[in-house]
Length: 235
Image (cartoon, rainbow, N blue to C red; front, side, top):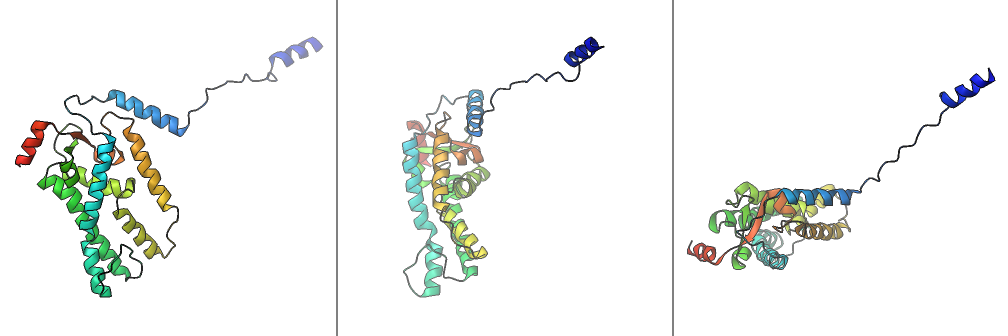
């Protein structure tokens, strides 16, 4: 009987379960990096057009930022001057009636949309003033003409709300602060720098130097060839 009990103890339910060791799970950054690399392997490289360098894109962004800022603050200057009776205006919405803050922001976005959507759609296809100056253009992923939807998603939604890299972003934040009656978030500046830096890092992971707003608009940019430049100026 004792022998039977000993056998039951060694072969019964008291046997310790075998441990199964799993491989260590990858972190979020590692998984995103692998996913991006795998996706790039499936994309066909555009060998007919040269990608735009990051330096050229930076100067293009900087020139457009300054020109668009000057153009889009026109309604702000007019409205603030009529309210205060002074030509000394700022881009700070605090201190003016809330409904006027909404009206100013609406017109700023309207002018911004004209600059970043209408001009590259109707006037210089695929080009803002800075892109025309630096000889590169926006196209769809199949090299077809950039659509109105793509330009709007790329330049307005992407740069304002995704990358937080447009001056219109500050108007949105100011409206939220004024409407909710909260303090201006001190960390907002660091968040914008991080999102802009992240978008720059993403350009290093793909052949076409696409940024976050390019992925949102399903677009890319490429350098114009000499014959394309001459044809474009003929328009």
